[in-house]
Length: 392
Image 1: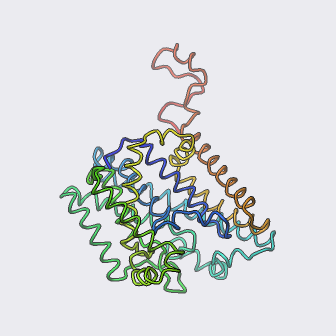
Image 2: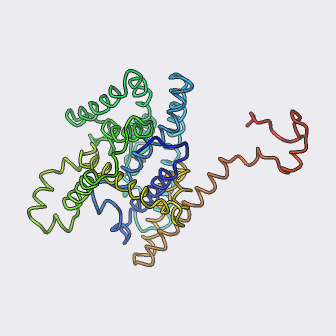
Image 3: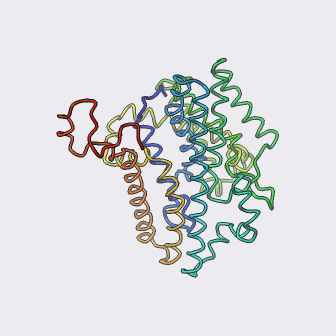
């Protein structure tokens, strides 16, 4: 994986695909499409792709800032991004909580506060608010952003270590991963129990900084040679056999191996099999795209790229849309057509969110309303009613 340009369409495609998968995976009501998610084919799913691609994207978004503007400004940029994510996390929590209240009142099908395990918060809102604001209360469904924020806060340290040597930075990441697993280092997710964050950032940071290292050019993708292709294919095949439920439930030998090595694929502390599987599938996917670059220009990739370029607003929308989709299925029931209709409606809503976010990010209000007329004006003179380039 070579250092990418500031706009890598491959990155956008994979991030967009991850967003669609996350939407389907987070629908709480069982539906036919749950059986076709990547998690059915191996230990990794969209969460791993999201974290790896986020690390790669952070190398493009923040790496140049550290390099050109210095460590202090680079760290300030990270803190600004974490600040945005923090308030996004709190906002989407209250939106989803309100939807759960409304759904419970109006639909009368399910108590969604219980389904999402929000009753402790509503039973003790004073304490719940304090723990929510300090991220010592991380309820179900709201796991990824706290992990991502914590990992981002580690980024200035990794950049500082890389100035000694990139090997020092990557070694520190590996040692932190091993320490988290060896000494059971976690963050508390609930004040009334010992449940940890579902995504342990002290372990998942290894995947993030692996993506960051590829994005910065510290690591390079192996060549597309037969030995590497065979090794990657073998890893994917073996882990598919061990993780595919119909196989390990019906073949005693495979089931015994799978249960004996659950620590290899467990999710909270990011089992090493997940790391191997992600690297192997990423390698095979990129080799395939190198061999058939036309795949990136197919009609399917257009929506993926659009969504992949607006991951934060789209991701926040998936948390709302997936829960709303579950409520819709609770009301109308399940069938192939109903499940498909709900999922496609969610996809269209995500595309709409991405389109709206792209529109606002383009800042159309800064463009001259009549470009041809603007070209004929003397330079240095501002047209009445136009905001200068540096304004808000």
